[in-house]
Length: 630
Image (cartoon, rainbow, N blue to C red; front, side, top):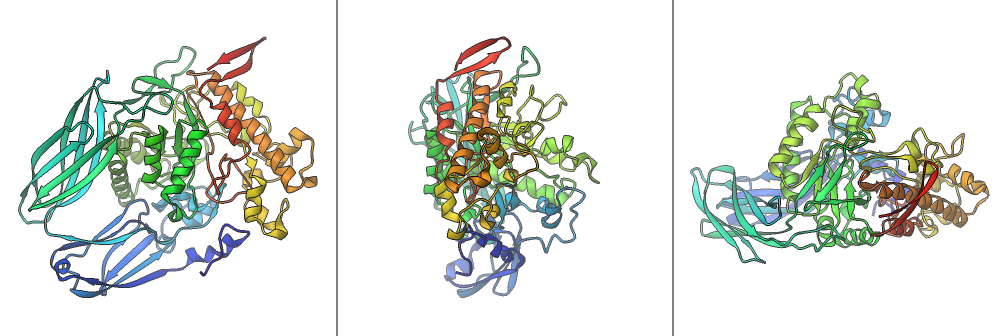
């Protein structure tokens, strides 16, 4: 190929030129006469990023959203026999050259990439744990569809149980595209395979897109439970649309569970924040999910399942899908459905102001989120949708409010997305932002809402002072962590033979900037300072193996402090979710416990033990020592 492994040594720097080019795909394909005579569409599963498409020399469409498929109508544009297709993709930065940056973002890198305008995974232009390595191209399947009878477009299935869980309504919604000039009649049928229940309804299929719904009433349904609380029972729902002498069928596997967030008043201060599933309060244990590969189109269902199984083996019951990434793959969610891993899913916005004051951008976001919620609604593991990552916090404390445009995204996160969530996913909890505190309090207030407790590791407390976690009273902490080195085996996997030492060029390139050496030990997550602070050893005098062991040990101690503090406060604190679970590429240091190669960090097993179903925590309480069994 043109590129060497971008994850080895300094090779990712040699791949930077990819994002600076326009890439043109050319293809010829043969079309049967029947396809040329009927309604037809070209469907691209995923395009990165700014795309224009020509068929037989005529431009047939553009697409600029990596989170949704592109369906381009080609009715009357195909010819029997050979056809030519040209697809041009670019990074989007050329097209955005005239768009505003300084009015929305504060980072100099974001001034250049203008990622806030781009509906694509935001991490690609660089995060502390990921290099600048933009995905570009046709990243999924491309299909040609044709028909003259109504087209079954979307199928959404979910269950709405009664408050006492004795009954449930299985809701089946379909979108159908009518292809005739006048309405036609169709028959919509749904069947639950496990119970044999069926429902059918005659529907009028108008020209264009129309929505239709049927429901099946269930008595004493078998429930889906998170791991450790019961079985993960899944129902198979078969959906058929009969019209024009043809039947189109789709199947969804789903579960029956009731989800709500208990925010009743706390007896000391603020409110509780307790996730309840099937009326049972749960303590949520887990980590943040990052894209499992920076070049995400290389992921396979087997890798997703392996990572989900490693999370379950670490006694997780929740993964938080972080908002600067991409929508969870169905393979990951199916594994979570079967394993009983709950999923908190941020919508795809992170750490920036977004142009909600631009009507076209806002409309595209509404289209994207509507599609996503419909597409993913059947997964019972998906228990919470969240509007974004850290944008409310940025409005309050990161200078966003002093930008030329203050809070331009307000209508997206406070108006549009809550309305879409209520309409399309009423069975899933919705939260405005993470962190977020209602009642007009500071978004990261420890007594209300959810929290990102980063004052240890990159805030006011020294990073080495992870015993400070013992004082934290956060109601629902779902992002905070301790940095540590990868294992020696992983370090040797990506460091060239002549660079397998601390601070070699490749070591630094794969390092997390929060691990960098600083003027004082223990500040801003300085991993090297932590080693010296706790062991008395100078990292400059340590070999790769000894340093990796010491750094991993300190990360393990810090994460156990984080987890143990919140577990002993159950349910005053109702979660211990840390940053982060996994890596997107091979790292020198990172916050994770499972690395890119799916090797377990030294911290993995201490975290697993801290998350065991029953544990004992010893902590000082004033002048006494208390023992907590949870």
